[in-house]
Image 1 (tube, rainbow, N blue to C red):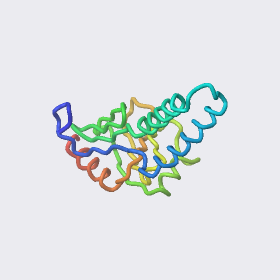
Image 2: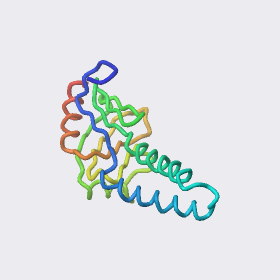
Image 3: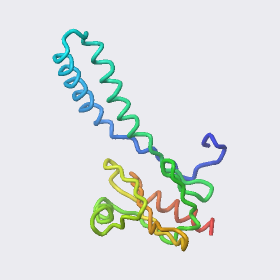
Amino acid sequence: MDPSGYESEYDERLTVPAWWWLPAAVTAGVLAIELHLAARAVPLPAVVLPVAALVTGLLLALSRTRVTVRSGELRVGGARLPLRLVSEVAPLDAAGRRVLLGPAGDPAAFVMQRAWAPGAVYLRLDDPAGVTPYWLVSTRRPAELAGVLQAARLRSA
């Protein structure tokens, strides 16, 4: 159960891959040493700590995105989509996602893209008042999310 008191039908946090932390730590170390060499009067810990905090904060900020389905609504970060406006749901693999992110994509679409999530879900909208033709949402589990969205969409219709 989430903090709002509603049971989530689907909840995924799109965290960065664990292996990203090692290159980030190496990058932070090299940057801290370079900064220390440029300002030798500043003690090394006074340079390392802020740089490490900055890199850690960046990776944590990239890991904040949540994809949630509950109460007839898809929530992606701060964006919300009532599922009654969705006319089609389709899971996409990396190749299908790449097509919609390339020249075949519509610039008016809502896109939540995370490079480290291999798949995505395509949601075509049927909203006469809206200008957004579809949503494209990155996910690690496209088939599962598409199934939950389809079931929730049918219930909310």
